[in-house]
Length: 238
Image (cartoon, rainbow, N blue to C red):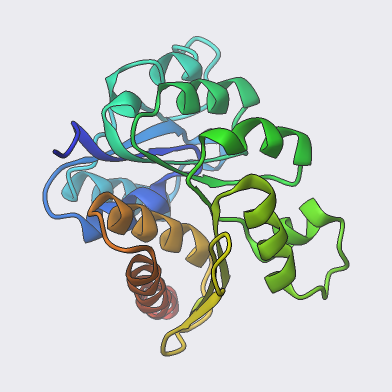
């Protein structure tokens, strides 16, 4: 049985929520977070309009970092997180917010880790899928910038007993599952664009919420991110 919210996006969220809501028909995506100092301008207004068009729940999305607002941690103790099929979050948030969200989550958890092995060790037991960037993967392993991400992802999967999904670029994703052969998912190359990784993670959360097998979910998310990259690049140049 599906839960109240199919996907809750906590943290670096607008692009991720857009992707999740695009792949999930009807309402069911909640965005929790704050806009921060980068809010404002035409691009931001357009994105907010798109989120509303897609029926994303923005009632817990704060327009800016305002000290008079309800503390962000309060939002993750309420129904949205506990009632989600998938929680998608990241370590850009204060650790206490992430910890609270993981404690309340009852569905699948996808985490974009930060470079701190200490916090990853704290959060990993509550996580089903780790989705680091290649740079973060290397930072966690204290590896050089040109290190092959495959053995690093394999080490992470074994150490924390999770599936590791690494968006290498706009058209290639690495999937490593514990004690299984790694898979490299490649689709037709898309254009280079900012936030492609964010779009990928949002699309992945949508497919996981739909109970799609992981390799199929990653392929669909990679295809969606590649297509979105081309659309975003075309829009920026027009």
